Amino acid sequence: VTYHDLRGTFICERAREGSSIEDITRISGHSMAEIRSVLEKHYLATDQGLSDAVILRSEKNP
Image (cartoon, rainbow, N blue to C red; front, side):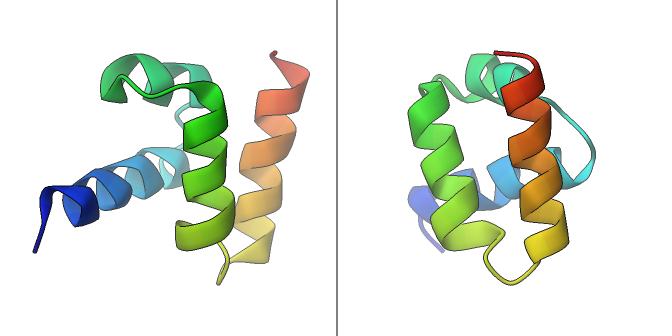
């Protein structure tokens, strides 16, 4: 397990718990674009409903 793996898991788990992308950005130190990319491409791709919910929340609260 690498740091990169752990970071991705952390990001995905926070999103599943309902944390906003803004909160995840502050906690992880990554930009919103980086967080969205991680969520869209790597971690939520298998759960389209969750992915859509996370993206919609972020778009409503830019």
